[in-house]
Length: 384
Image (cartoon, rainbow, N blue to C red; front, side, top):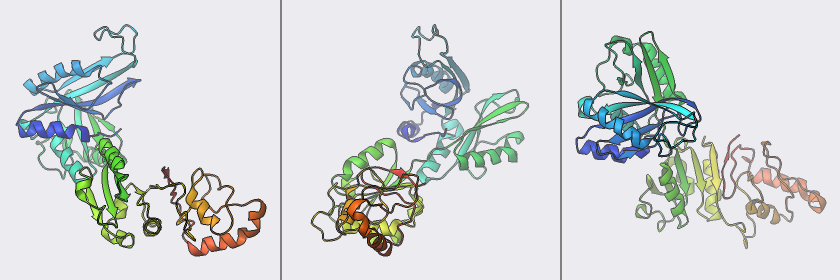
């Protein structure tokens, strides 16, 4: 599991601006069923306010008391909870998770340059992968529990003992950042827990109409980074979408030059202007994004003499695809199975007589029909 920092940022910025130290809780070990898994973070302020969760609200109150001691003393502390027995002693609540966890609390404040929060926040703002390490257990007087190890190219870190500066430590940090997985490095006298930073996905929303507002709101709540693009000046207004990272006025044919499409994890095509949506899909077909979606009315294209689907559409009853072949005088009876790479429709009955002609026009009009992008109305599907 990766460390999700977004929910902690407002509290971190507030306390840092006031010059007050905080306690950062890192979930390092779990056994059995637990609400969160290793790598989860919680930030606790001196006044008891906290951001992030390591349980469903059952343990945070007690953890707050331990955090106050860490903030005051500056000494890291390990806190363990075990709810695997029906008669657990934690306030007599009989918690039902039936698991155990170990949380390492360490101080982050002016004395240590707000690390590791400062490094993680900088990487999150730059949308760069990174990982940090924290000493959980140590019998070495020079390596104290709670010591933080940052990547070698990071600034602001405290001087480290020689053993923590070894190449094996930095190699593990790099591997964890690349793979997005936590890990351990155990030496004879200390144990290092490594956790990578979770970067929120960047989503491209192609269409800034009124129905884009709830999509943006949902993305903001999830902590995702959203870029909106629309070819209509009346819609591409940054003030309409304060939660978006960027709002851009651009035509579909200029999209690849205006944006780095490789930087987006997925996209939603929803301008509801079919000619523009077709050009947008054609422009984006070379992008390496894993997920593409298209949203629109089920009867899209009604009244148009001929509208063909821009790329294979795969879903349950996609009207755009039906309309594409209805204009040819035939309607597809079914699509191939979800495991198939080709999405060429098959026909039965009278429609079978026109199958060859329709398929030839499909392939000629849209030669990139064999692309593995899956675009369909109102949903997502990963590219296989």
